[in-house]
Amino acid sequence: MRKLWNRQTNEVFGESGMFADKDYVQLMFPARKIRRVCCPALNIEYVEGKDWRHEPGSCRIVRTAESAIPFWSDAALHPPDAESRYYPDPAANAVGGGLDGRNLRFDAGDLFARNQIEIDYQAESIDYAVKLPEQTGRLPRFRERLKRPGAACRISWLGDSISEGYNASGYLHKPPFQPAFAELSAEGLREAADVKIELLNRGLNGADSSYPLSRPEIFRGDHPDLLVIAFGMNDLLCDGGTAKYLDNIAEIIRLNREVSPETEYLLATPMTGNPMRNSTKLELTAAFARSLRGFAAECPADTALADLTAVWCKFLERKNFFDLTGNGVNHPNDCGHRILASGILNVLAPDFFPFHEP
Image (cartoon, rainbow, N blue to C red):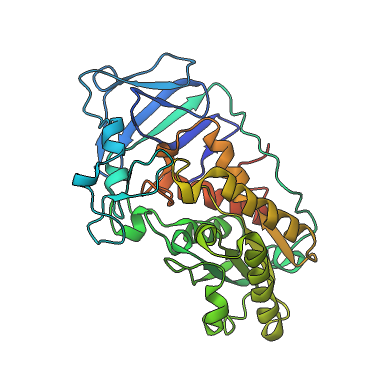
């Protein structure tokens, strides 16, 4: 699990960006020195002065006029009807439903990764700070197990296509072959604690929080130490709104407790999708995140919350959506998967992961 940054040295690793209708990429932090600008998907390292430039102390990587780094115009981000094939067509390059009536660029493969860059740099300082719900005292059995060298820990993971791994390069079997955020979370726990993590990833493309209730056999036989429940993106499209979403999550927990009373639970709020699409407007995701925060706060100590919405949105205060997207609509790229995994690990291994001072 490659960390996002090192606060002690101010080094930032693999921060992604995309020249999407702008000739610059905004960095998370003012950069003292750029170490590398590259495209891992293409195994290309771009050259300072020729392809990009940076003013020491600034937050911008600027694309030069003669640069080999891809640039996407506004027209490329919004393909016209005559040039569009719509999801779920296997060759889809667009989805409808833009707030302004236009189509939105979509790709189920690595198109975005091949047109994005990753930047390694030394920051002037790392001032990322996000207010997250206090989780001290929660998951006592799981935390105690992590302290036992060589202990076996089983994690079962329920979720949608993001949990399944969509648009992570490893899931696509494309360079640089990075695992998705469920697997990255397990890797991070193995690094943070001398334990044996078994991950049972039950994430499924298209699933919403009702899916495990229609197929309880997919998780009731797992008997995990920790059950991660990471729905929300597809629930935005479902009837019943936040009330049904919370009812479904409560029922998943109840069904699992019947057969596995020692299991503890980690509930994850969703990342946000393309803010220019009606079905993924920021206020919709925010409402689901607020509801899950309130639900988790009323749960007993065997249940904790990973507020991935807050973590993700803090990045979007400085980054563009296209810097972090894997498909243009509702999936993260490799850097985005690392952000989500870091949000999980900030709860499960807070001494090891980066959203607080060491």
